Structures are given as C-alpha cells and as structure tokens.
Image (cartoon, rainbow, N blue to C red):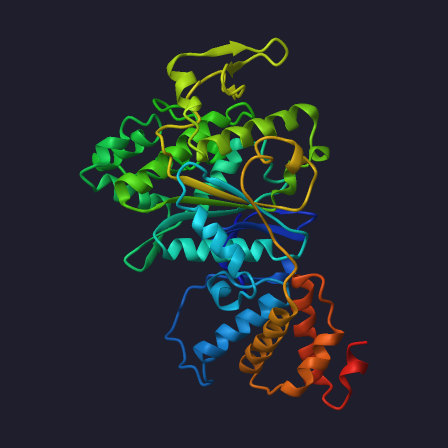
Length: 444
C-alpha cells in the first residue's frame, strides 16, 4: 500500500518503493521528481475524515518570508538549495551560466558537458539552468542518474524519468507532459505530429475526446504498459535506444514548431555512470550505443534519418541485430525507427560529469563542447557566507554578529562548496546555542 509523505525541500509525494529494510524510500514527488530519500528525512501524512469543524488556530502562522528562509536553511544542512530558490543563491558562476545559455540556441550542436569534481556545484548549476530555461520559453527535464538505479543501458527507464520531470511554462504557470500534449491537440497544427508513430497515437485520441489514464501510462513509459493492444510497443530492451530518441526528438520538434517554445532542454545529472567499471562488457556497449545515438540526435546528425530512409543496415557478426552502415549504431531488432524524427529536433542537453579519462578518449564526449567548473573565488565564498547568515537570522529570528563572519570563514572547509555551506549552518547553530564561547573553540 502506497503512503503519502512530505519532505521539507521537495514537498509532498508518494512512496513507491523501499530498500535497506525501509531505511530508504523511493518517492515520486508531486513536482515530478523521483528520488531515494532517507526515512528520517520525511514526515508521513495520514488522511483523516473531518468529523467536526476544525478549531480556529490560536497560534500565529509563520510568515511567508520566514518560512522561505527556514526552508532554505534546512536545505543548506544537506548541502543543497531548494529548486524554487536556486536563482537567489548562486554565486560566482556567471561565466559558466552565460556560456551554457549562449549554446542553447545553436541548433547544430545540441549537447554540452559540465565537468567538475564532487561538491563543485554541478547539480546547483544544472538547477539554475533548469529555472532559467523554464522562464525563457523552453520545455525542461532534469534527471538524476545512477549507475544502479537509472543507468544509460536502460533507455526506457531514462525516457520515463525524462517524461516524468518534463515541465513547460505557459502564462506564468508550469505544466507537465500531459498538458503539453493536450495543448498540441488543441492547436490547428496538431496534424503535423500525427505522422509520428508514437506521439501521433496520443494526438488522434485526444482530438477524438479520449483522455484515458492507460494511454498516458503507455506513452510515459510505465513498466506495466510495455504492450497496449493496437499501439506500437514500448520495448524495455537495452538495444532499443533508437525508439526513445525518436520519441524525444518528436517532443522537441513539437515544442518548437507547434507550441512555439524555443525547444526542449534535457539536463542529466550525476552522469559519471558512464565509467566502464560499473557495467558488464555487454552493458557498457549498450551505454555507449545510447549515448552516441542520443548526442547525435541532439546534434541533428542527418545520417540518422538517411540510413533508415535508405534501409542502410547490416547484421553484426558477433552481436547480431541491425546496425547502421553510416553511424555504426545498433537499432532495435523489432523496430528500426530513426534516432532522429525531424531535423532539427529542437532538443538540447547538458550532461554533468566528474572528471574521467573516458571523456577525453571516447566519442561522442571527446568532440562535444565542455565547460569546466573552476574552483569558486574566495570573494564569492565570503558573499555566500554573508547571505547564508542573513537567511539564518530571518529563519530563526535571531541575530548573528556579522563581525564574526571573517573568523568563521577562516575556520570553515573551503575545497567543497556543498561541505562549506553545510558547515556554515552548523557554525551558526553552535553560535546560537553557545553564545558565551569563542568561535575558535566551537569550530576547532
């Protein structure tokens, strides 16, 4: 039986899976995120029938600005920033952000890579791009990858996660993938998508008045709906990367050419799961088949369409299956759809990697643009500490002696941004509960 929970950072959601004897919970949050969360970090919600009129609250509700500050501080304790406040707490990354924004509109090169060590701020930077792109007329998805839970050799699961986190903005409100497809069906140009083998099925059903849950679960890649009678199958095979790149390219094309968005940005975090020691030889081959096809799709490689139109395939002597003569990509044996539906696809992607030699030696990552996240300058760390202190004051209605900040700064670890901000909040806590003790004594 599923349970409803609430997390101070990610909000409300539903528990869909447990592991480690219930110590960790896999939660599908109402905002579309799907994450593993420690049980102790959530509050379980119990629905009760209201039998009588509730009493009027006697205590004052926390003011909105104080609640926002409290939310931010509790996130800082984990070394992160809440999604909705990420633009208000970004320091020293103007060059990286501007470089990524400038490349988003280059239709011929739709992939780029962020390179940075653990705790360098890659995730924070991706979330800043997410918020900025959403406000600037892009559809966006942000997916946190994992070599165990969400590896690249499982293209259907990657696709499901992308669709699950899909958002676009219209008239100041955010909407999900379902509303995106409904918006297309309401336009006069919806017929342009009917030729798409998968998305066309949804458009025809919506235009005829059908809006059934099982149809959405099928196109969204739910595991229980691989096969739906009368519809093309959503194969859960490592060799079927072409199908899911085909669908994603259709979504990007429709976003730009029917809805009027600038395109579809896919942000892939924790992408160090390309490191070969995580996988078997077979799995590793499928990882790179997906990545090469996916990057080629975002880069609008016309060979992807040409080799399918010309039926230019060969059968591999060792791995069997069908392979493209021009691209050397493996195609699903059940459905040789092109990785790219229309050119340009309208899909852009940003990967976040830790440094690894495979990125320098193997295609496609040895050829696509990359942005290295440099160590943040000291002046920005000091600014971050000062801002955090002001937020802490607002959150707990307690003053922090600003004259102590230079001494606190010198005692904090500064090589890792995530640890720095966690340590800063712990320092403020110690000052709050031990006002009579020296900073050096508390933080030694």
